[in-house]
Length: 309
Image 1 (spheres, rainbow, N blue to C red):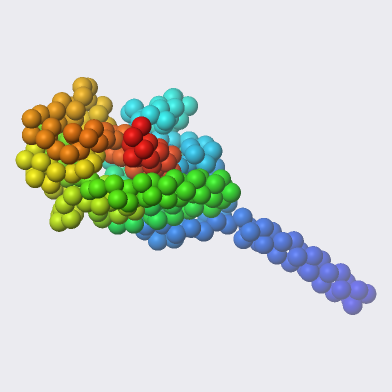
Image 2: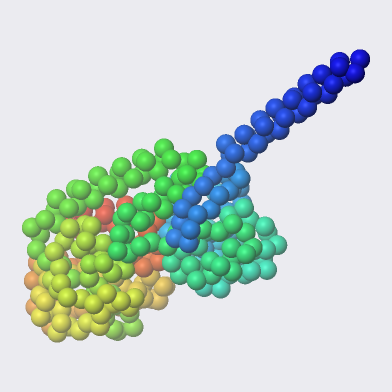
């Protein structure tokens, strides 16, 4: 009897162990581990409630078809305007999160990057957080890595591969056009002032990864670029002039960049005379940056410009 009782207990114990093992295996299989700018993060399952403090990540999540629960308040640029809707919880601003609201909502994942990256440590104390800041020294590689990171987290790798392939094909097409197209200069205008950016800088992708030669190869890399003047533009005399109107990006009225550059000095440049002054999509370049839709739109615009359209 004792022997039979022991066998029954052993069998029951083994059954329980098998159930527990299966349960643990299920948990392990559901875990998702990703690397980001501040380290690594492991989640027990695909996050359901997601708060996003980075416009590039929001752009990419939208392209992947991932629903988010919370976004910063205020107007959203272009194709992200839907997130102004009240159905998305407003969780502060890019620079100042509403920590109390975030803590009360208990999100499964918080995403920061760029302007909001400074709040990573504070937000990480509330909920699992990743930093998807883009490395401007490797803009395309970094942005596509972030695309794959988000795709891994949400089980969207097939869609990410599709978006990546389309973008890379468009970049190759663009590089075929920029080769031998002359030299370019990138100018940012704001409040009547100008600055220029070169390869390796915040907006340097146009020279590095998109293949256009620089009219000035000695531009200092800095957060706010290198101060520029009308005389500087004429001195460098670019074949192509790319203009980013910061005032337009942040919602100021008017056509400040066009008015600023339409003067007797800039009109003497090759770029102006050949009608090769390209006014870039301000929101895509200044506010969104490394989002896959913004990147694709940017390359499409440049392909059209170099095709004379």
